[in-house]
Length: 114
Image (tube, rainbow, N blue to C red):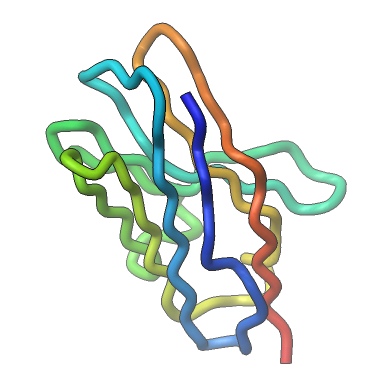
């Protein structure tokens, strides 16, 4: 399975960014797709994820600001990030977990700064 992410970049505090990720290869269902992030000097942490059936989980720090969505036909997952804060600055990693294997894409850098 290959995961190709896009959409990172620079945003001002209070601004928005949208991350997208496309999965390809031998993808088994059901699965969960989502996003993790890692800031310098910290461990990778879950940001948000969504199951094939549409159930979602969010980190407490992003609830109400970020929205995860997916297209099961296109095998894509998106992360709409609003009201961005400097502490959201990190490398964001797309993830697919089919309850047997865990896959990560290359990271995309999100920087929130004025």
